[in-house]
Length: 317
Image (cartoon, rainbow, N blue to C red; front, side):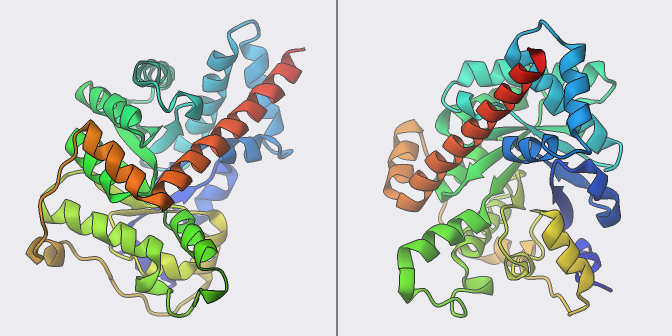
């Protein structure tokens, strides 16, 4: 079997793309999107008409409402291809506003439900700020499942587990990027590869914590830079992978072994830990990598959301 098929034997494979026409060849169960992926897709000739058509159908409505119509339209197309769930992201500019995040999530779910899609097939993506985690906790109590994204710190994962969120997306590649940049010329790629990759280590620690303490939140590794990071996390609940890396896995028949094991995690000796708001904020502040990458990620997603806004305004004029 190729590596992609081997990986599917013990990990749910998710496609990380807004390009729904690419999905079928990889047969993922789920798919994830984000503002940057949607922006990239709508600039391609294959998808520009979908944007124009959606904007025309909702001319005169508020800009943020049209944006949500576009996001859900992509989600609906994705759900025609994948048998499982699609993740649709709340505007990153609401990352520090719990009430606004909840309101936007309600609108997104409402659009899916009016299109005949049950909420069990949708994950609302929310940045793993303290405010985002509280919004997700409230949404989960209503039966709206959430995917907490831009997750870099252990304290974020613990708080998400305590909040009962459905799924988290720790960002492997962006953690790797930070440590590699910090090390500069001293970085040893071979020594920090595979299980020693700092992004891989972060996800493994979260996975062990969740499985050891029986936390039901799913762990989905995300943001991969190379196949080695993926294979080092074989056995993780889910992995969301770009089409480029899915193709690389599909083209290789090298043997692949399970690396993360729930039984081993349950047998480990781990301390129990929880965070209230003050402790969470302090722990996040103490983690320079997580603080910087969370802020950077929110800024980047917000910038791409603004670019999508501008495209829609142009089409309305």
